[in-house]
Amino acid sequence: MLEFTYKAHCDLLGKFKIDTEYDIVTVRQTIRQYAKDMGMGIVDQTRITTAVSELFRNMYNYAGGGEVLIERGEVENHHALIVTCTDQGPGIEDIELAMTDGYTSGQGMGYGLPGAKRLVDRFEIQSKLKEGTTVRMMKWK
Amino acid sequence: MNLHEKRIPIIKIHDYLIVPIQVDMHDKLAIQLQSQILEEIAKTRAKGVLIDISVLEMVDSFIGRMLSGMASMAAIMDTSVVIVGMQPAVAITLVELGLEMPGVDTALNMEKGMEMLERRLNSRKTDSF
Amino acid sequence: MKEILNIKNTKERIDRIEDILASVASGDMDARINSEIEDDFSGIEAAIDLLINDLTDELRQRENMQKELENKLSKIQDQQKTILQQQEDLLELSSPVSKVWDNILILPVIGTLDSQRTQVMMENLLQKIVETGCTISILDITGVPTVDTQVANHLLKTVTAARLLGAECIISGISPAIAQTIVHLGIDLSAIRTKATLQDAMIFAMKQNKRADEVRALGNLALPNEKTD
Ligand SMILES: Nc1ncnc2c1ncn2[C@@H]1O[C@H](COP(=O)(O)OP(=O)(O)OP(=O)(O)O)[C@@H](O)[C@H]1O
Ligand SMILES: [Mg+2]
Image (cartoon, rainbow over all chains, first blue to last red; front, top):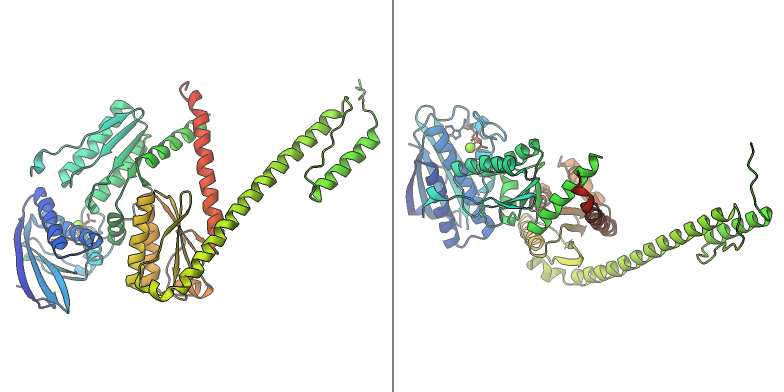
């Protein structure tokens, strides 16, 4: 349903569902392993793992869960790890607001989305009310 | 891997509680740990808590919030919390995420953390004279 | 009722005190009153001698510390010279972090900083802090001509990350040009401890060390009484 700016030739690494709190942990660990396998340094591994953890929790909290697509590809002359999170939740009314440091509609601290964006090299978010939200992040090797 | 059954030990030594977090915590486990520590403080009347996170490879906003919340709650109960042994990669990531955890005491290792608690305790005792 | 004070040779003895104090003030730390008379005034003479003793000890200690500091500093300066000579190579390598003193790390940064180099440097420094257990580190940017927003932010981030580890990071040697840039860019460095020179930073770091030792010693002394309350 969504068009992304960064088109890439990708290999699919894995597809996972986030339904429970345990899934948040296991899938972020899986992503760390992919990052490690690609040869990312320890800090970048930690960055991408933390960023995806934020997105997974958002899907779990606000959309009752969602799906994660992990790919590897060449983007703008970089080896990239690409993580796409899709949910069929309520959507985000004001994306700009949601991307603001400190904004939360619930009990969070409101650093999830803007923080995740700072931790990766490319970050795109699209959302439609009542249809869902998709976030795609890329981290260069 | 059985995530459902992990439990984090709380060890009491003298006036202190030591909590070595050795698993990648899911949210429920983090919340459970928080109340477990608070209960243990009340029960043992511990004067300080050292939370050792040296093996944690990631602290996201949820765990970060749990840790700083832990420190504030313990403070209300007149107990100091020191977060010990954060890895450099974790610290960098937390700062970039935007979680600078102001007001949370940190120490490089257990020994330094213990020293910090002792200092706290002593200055508090002299205050009360 | 008036008490009669028993003081012998008042005039000469006051003169002697004045002489001795003058000698001490002019740097003769061996001068003492050493009065042999025992009367109501001898207590004061003895007290003055004691004070001169204390003062002498204090000065000696300061001198020693100063000497040690100068030695270390000249070592660092030599180090920095070598580093300057190897600047070209250095830009390729990561920056050297050295432990110059018990509990103190110094990272002298020389040359232009770009975002990537700053990042590598920051990671090295934090890693070294954890490895050595040093709680104070000094990031000396005397040798850095300018910084941009990104680099300034990385520096800021380093200090905050160090705090999360349980260590303090001081930035020294901020040049007028860099100070101007930082303020113009609207970057808030107020939460960060900055010192004019590497020397100032070293003195500050050593004082912190000393204070920590004192508190520790105090704590040990206080412990036996603790149990009573
Ligand atoms: N997948 C999603 N579906 C619907 N709304 C979302 C989704 N993700 C984020 N939001 C909305 O955007 C807001 C900001 O999200 P963000 O992750 O930045 O902060 P938070 O989750 O509220 O707090 P934190 O992540 O710091 O615990 C959320 O409060 C929520 O209203
Ligand atoms: Mg969130």
